[in-house]
Length: 542
Image (cartoon, rainbow, N blue to C red; front, side):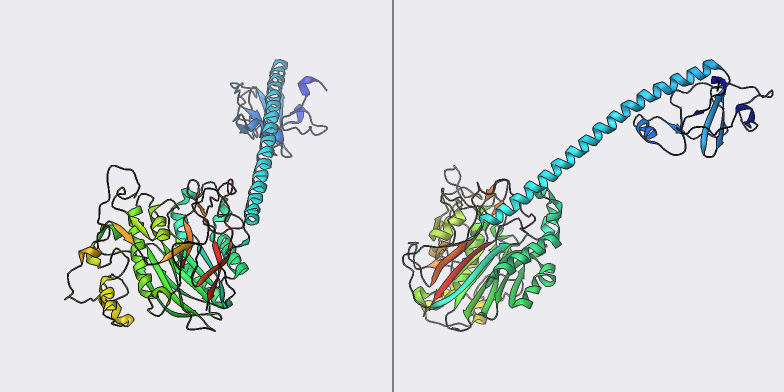
């Protein structure tokens, strides 16, 4: 077959045998003149003729943004085109035009070869990327499992432990991370697996952790109100009952205490609202929850458990200190018992204090005393040129610097016994759920009990864990680095930590050190919150 009669199938499909230029019908070709002679058109470099079926070559060519035209019954470059059986053919009139087309096809082939190389490179890059992603996922899963291996129960050695009978129970403290708060602060979780941040995944992990250990008392923080009703309430089907208090502002989360009803009975409970009108240091919506329990088999052996979630703002240590002053004042009211050892029932305080072991808040709780007047404003740091001064909580709340209600203290000294209802009518703390009606003929405040520049309290609290010791630097959450802000404290006889009171610490669920936690993100595939849970086993001696 001569070149003049060659059929060029630009779509890559060979011509039908027996066809010839003389058999072509070009009557509908627009580019013919009156004498049926070819009217050449201007050569368009970006024009590539292809078969309607897009081939790999056309895909590769598309990387160069070359335009594709499916032509039918048109003539370009003096070429006749006819569509036959979904194929595009061209016949040239002159040999030099055929050569021009051959050169053009050769140029396109080179471009297509380059495109194939580009496609191949992209393919390998995708393979490498997928391989890296798979490797990262494997590493992430290994870190998640490594975290579980770091946590185990460890017995507490105590030479003074006795063999006296008692009620043995476990307490879990857990900030479960409100999903609303997570959604409002997504930048805190940029390096996390998005799947692990979904509530249904997180709830499954939280529920699995709770049901795995089945603690007798659960102290929970950041429990979203809707989740408390629709998710955490399922714990009631496995033997728990609960009390709950939402924050007082617009936030949708709060604190909850769940307890096993077959072992423990609830004697009474109350909540503390840290928002107090017209007091600047107490203008936040955080709350505390306090419950008095007794073992079902020994109902006279009462004890108190409190939980709280203090303000987060790292710069406002003064606000957290004032919140603790209110909380301890209410714990003092609920736990006071003149017939008990030291006049108080045994107390456990568990929660997210948003304070590290080197903070003024931690020092105050564990040492029972803090001279704050010489500390810096707000941050309460030592060694600064400005000072807080003697005023922290105004005297109009009638809360002493020893964390007691001044009006109740006066009645105790007179041996007056007041009902809880009467107490609420005497104290000055504001509470949104109560009438807040107080006596108008109260005596003037005893200035010796207020604004002294030093805070004290009547409880000797000891931490279940070893926070603050440089050789055991534990972590409970990540805030730019792994830090400890969650605690379980329990009351002892005095601040000599070797002498315990009614509560005997038997064991604790180990917290990893900061070094062990490097490379681990939470929430993850096994941990449902951005805080680690804390657990301890106690014996309440009879």
